[in-house]
Image (cartoon, rainbow, N blue to C red):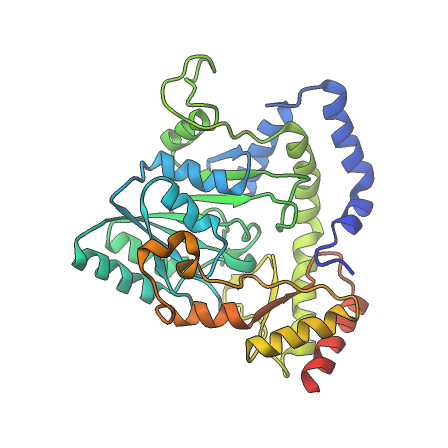
Length: 377
């Protein structure tokens, strides 16, 4: 069994996928081909924003926005402690200081009340200038943007939606990558919408920001020539072949994959909800289920469950075993064990089960029965 079955997906999409990749090879337009521009428009239309600017990967997408907003030394950028390293890394890379905030124990996403407390603490200390918030759509579910946007507006902070795992999620009629002042996503192969390598994108409604991003992703080029460099930038373009792959996958994602993962998640919850803490999707929210994550009673129970499932050929993953504020790279910030208790507890107790659009009911029953058997022992 595959944790995220890209092989099965390829077999389903093989005719269209092979044709799309072959067209790129035949035309030899490997960089900035027409598929890139087409994809950007398709993604912008899907999300419902004016501009989509693709780039080399999800980390670069976040970095480009840090650069566009001139995030720098002395700035404080607030970010959840329960997330992938890149969400905080891009802040420190610009010389700014990540301020870690605890998460909601049910949704795994940034807690708006604790965010406000963290902002007030930084303002009271007076050492850093609060500039921005990076809210993460963890495991496919958008963060609580109605509350987070209100906090950011109250304290005049920029808001970046980190939708690396959230593409396809929504709150009401608003789609992930449309929240905040800008949004970034990743097309890493295992993401809800993934390519066959690295890829990413930034979404914005601001014309000037979009123009700046298009310059920054190609060494700070001018609009007229890549050999007229008007600012310092980076080299971060989405390859044409990845854009072609994403065009095929986006069609399947919209037509049936998103519905399929939600059916799979519902089935998992029906099978397991009475024996273990299953994921919570609040009323009005919709997840794209990058992961289906259980909360166990202890680290020991998790280790036991993982071993039991491994013996039956069922893969599991732990996202994430160590919170951001306790990472060695951020040791100089002075955080201690116990500072952000919800994130710390989740890191000890969460485990993710196989999840993808091509799981059938037989697969789900097999995994669910194995989980029940292990937990009932």
